[in-house]
Amino acid sequence: MELTMFRPLLIHFRLTLLLALATAGLVRAEEIPRHQHPWGRFAPGSWSRTRIVTETIGEDGKKLRHEELVTTRLLKVDRLGVTLQTETTRGDRVTKSNPVTLAWDGTGRDGQRKERLSLGEVKFKGRSHSCQTHTVTRVIGETNVSTKSWYCPDTPPHFLKQLIRVRGSKPRHTAIDVVKLNATRTVKGQEYTGWETRTVIADRGGRSRVMSFHSEAVPGGLIQSQGESHDRQSARVGTRSKTLDAFHAIPAPPADPTEE
Image (tube, rainbow, N blue to C red; front, side, top):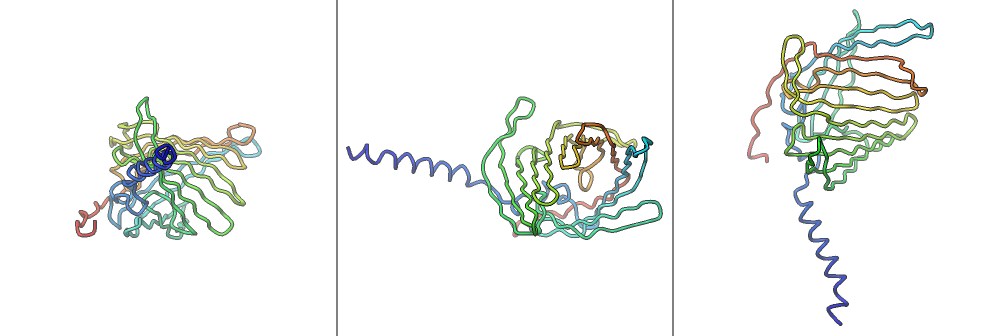
């Protein structure tokens, strides 16, 4: 009689204990190893430059072409992540963005931030990869940004899937998936080994789809991408390509064991 009465409590205790043991190894964004971030494996002073070509169709049906060079520089690395700044060159005009700070999981460090961790898996080419799911919610004024990432510590590039939902005056939904591991590609006579991703973005204006190739050899990772945008009636309204133009990579110093 007494054993039967306490059985639900015992079951609840066992489930709680199993969950605690399973989640004990989860790491927060600031605990993700630096070298697993596309900029973290490099030292400040590193940069990459991409050539961006955008083609759109004007109201008169004519094709418009714009070209620019975007240089992204690594300004700072600290315990929580990196600080980046971009420089855009269009013809003779050069503009610099304000520096942006990112956590090791790729999310911004601005606004009010909350993080929730759990266990999960990603199925890739018929194989399951154990991972941690990081759900980060940031409130920036009237805008709410929710980012859910599938982080696999043992499978490069480590973040195999990411969903980003922006709520506010300019709502947007972004889905990023790694679609191919151990890929190779030759760009400007240089062969790179890396991975391919698919990015789908939907907002009030329509939808865009981007296929990209990345490599750990380059600061920031991006080697090449090709994207198409469509309006809400599914008509193609433009394309955008990005190609690595040049880069400067300074390897990060070895980790200090006293800081681990």
